[in-house]
Amino acid sequence: MARADRLFRLMQLFRDLPAPVTAARLAEGTGVSLRTLYRDIDTLRAGGALIDGEPGYGYRLVEDTALPPQTFGREEIEALVLGLAEVRYMGDRALAAAAEMALAKITATLPERQQRQAMHAVVKSYRFEGRPEPAIHMGALREACWEERALDLVYVDTDGQRTERRIWPLSIIFFEKVQMCLAWCCLRQGFRRFRLDRMEAIAATGESFRPRRVPLLRAFLDEIRAETAKRRPPGPG
Image 1 (tube, rainbow, N blue to C red):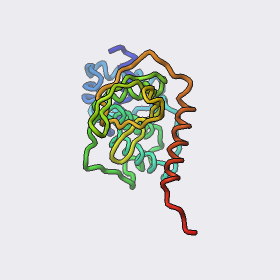
Image 2 (image 1 turned 60 degrees about the vertical axis):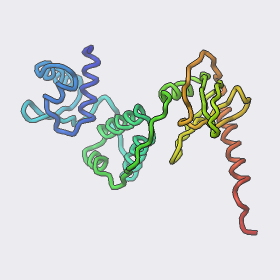
Image 3 (image 1 turned 90 degrees about the horizontal axis):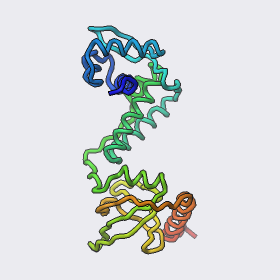
Image 4 (image 1 turned 45 degrees about the vertical axis):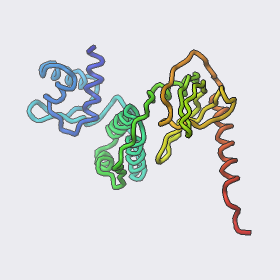
């Protein structure tokens, strides 16, 4: 591991692990000897990171100079903790890991009192039933949305019929029970909602639909709102 990458990894361990964290645990996490670890800690300190502790006691990141200091109200902290907990449940493994890292980074920038509030937030979110992982690569689906590139999709509909089609992925929607991809279907020449658990395979293509994602998504959402309004029962006369 390159030295710069190792120092970045060390800083991330300080953010992620409960303090004080032992030198042995930090050395294991960065794959170096204790002697090298102590030199790396001295390097971070020389660069401005405020790291408290010493050999035999453990270390604690007092102030993370790599990130700007943040100030949040208590309810804002509760909202962040709750929202990221939901991402850990609803997202795939990569997204769940990103939520963990984001919370660690945010917490590292808070004053000590607010760090305690984040670690012991009153509002909690627990899910006792795990969400099954989709068969497709979720990172590839998100990348196609961001890069506005078409995907070739193998899809199984409600009747069990398997079709192959090309789609322009616009957005990924998380519901309580299912996840859906809102897309323009090139086969049907219209907007479609594809359940992720019915996607058998996706493949990247070189076809770009940039810069049409935002206006297409806006039009699709307008269509969904119109459908919802039609189904809504009329109010009292």
